[in-house]
Length: 169
Image (cartoon, rainbow, N blue to C red; front, side, top):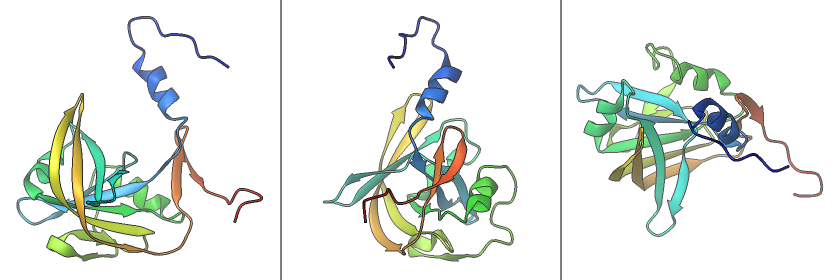
């Protein structure tokens, strides 16, 4: 099926729906604000950039209330959520005290690391770039940890869980 060319004005809602066809993993990116309080939010814009040096990226909307925390911090952690952490994703996608009652620990550069995640990447911010209505953060991975398990996935505006494809191990 060929999608029709879009006429002006650009339909951002339809564009978002089309982008939603691309399944992504779900992460919570964390840092500490200028007062040392843990901050974090749910993202699905995480990607590997380079193996040598080990670089990753993610993006944050410019109107985010916690943008100043990331601008100040110099470090961030990416916590890759497991399939049983939908509640954690929802918590960090909503306003309010996100860390209260949550199991986490401090890692490199005192970064908040969420428990039960499939992977944690502790990063030093090495570059930021404007990207339309977002800021793109590039971080050098200083330390990481991973465990086996099934990832939490987001596609088409809803959560999903990956299943092994038949015939592949």
